[in-house]
Length: 308
Image 1 (cartoon, rainbow, N blue to C red):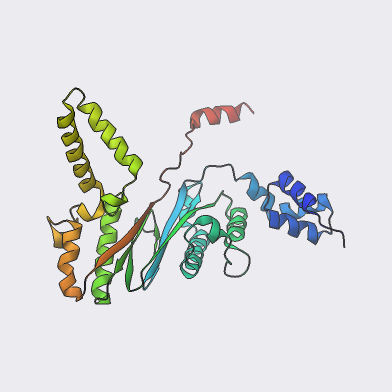
Image 2: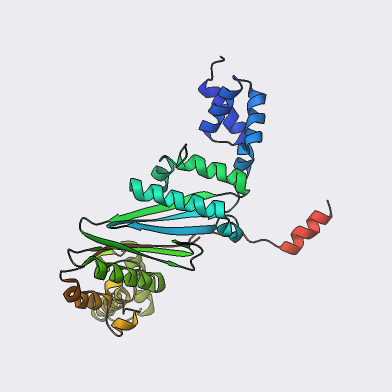
């Protein structure tokens, strides 16, 4: 059998854009024949998949999966919204979420290296799906929450299938209280997070850079005022901002807790749960947020195509 060198694998990868492991498998299958390896990858659809990798993938699905005291959220992107209705894609998303839940991996790179049901890795399964589905697919991000004692609840907005949709949220509650009460509360809080989109649990969790930006805006809006007055305005403004964007200080959007903050609503439910309740954290993924989507002039594209 011919020796498959790292240099040859690298050359095939650069030529086809396929993954390193796929290139090694191709060269092994054809005993080192470079051109035959290219054909092998083309037949498998893997070199074609690589050509799609530069296309912007901002659609797809976000998924939330929970099991007792742990939960995960994962985002897998596609090029078009049509793919979110594809049963094969939905199965891929579910399986990746299940792998994340079992492994506890909280970043896309580590999750991609985990074993995928049926063989290979998560990353390889996604590459294979690119070839069969016909669009660029990317495992964009993943996050996990868990508590030693308590529950993790979820809510998925614009749900396409169970646990998969356009916005996915998990909320972790630490408590020794009644699990049924905690689960109901965790879901209510997840719905609140989906709607209100808090930036942090409390003021201490806010990004310092965001706070500095808000201070700068307040200072510019009140330029010319005495230093002692300006200091009080900025301090008051930051406190108001924190109440608007911090989950515990936000007014609950659940009808059972009308007019009360999230912190007050949780405190009230401690009696029913039979134990203190602490919100340990939340994760909210909105599909495609932060991805710069390409815009195109459809009429111009048609005209260009007509010119040949």
